[in-house]
Amino acid sequence: MEKANDKLEKAVLEVLHPIVEENSCELVDIKYLRERGGRILRIFLDKEGGVTVDDCANVSRELSVVLDAYNIMPQHSYTLEVSSPGLRRPLNRQSDYERFKGRKVKIKTTDPVDDRRVFSGTLLGMEGEMILVEVDGRSYRVPFGSISRANLEIDFGKGARK
Image (cartoon, rainbow, N blue to C red; front, side, top):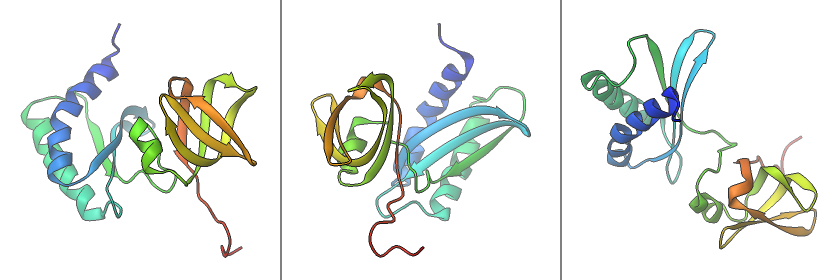
C-alpha cells in the first residue's frame, strides 16, 4: 500500500522534473518530512560544476508557483527548501556510480556482503548490477539492490590541511 508521503512525492516529481531540466539541473533527492518547526518539502539539486544559489532560487520560485496553482500540497502549511546535496552527496541512481568513479564513498547495505555491511573506500564503478568498491586494497562487489544508503565522502588526501 502506498503511503501518503509517497503519493505526495510522486505528484511533486511530476511537476518538478520539467522545472529542474529547464534550469539545467539534476534532481538528486526529494523528501517530505515533519520536523520540529512543521512540515518541510526538501529538494536537492546538482549539476556539472555545482549548483548555485541562483539555481536553487529559480527552481524554488517556479516550483512554488506550480505547487500552488495545482494545489498539490496538503492544506497544512509547509516550508519549501531547495539546495545542493552538499559534499557528502547521496548516490541514488546506478548512473551515479559511474559518474563518481574514482571518488571516496561510503556504502551501507541491508544484508552483509562478504561479512560486512559498511564499505568506506574508492568507488571503482559498476559491472552489471554490481557496484565495485575498493576498501583497504581489496575490491568488493556490492549488489545495487542491497544498498540501503550510499554517499560521497570528503577526501582530504595528500596536501590537505590539518
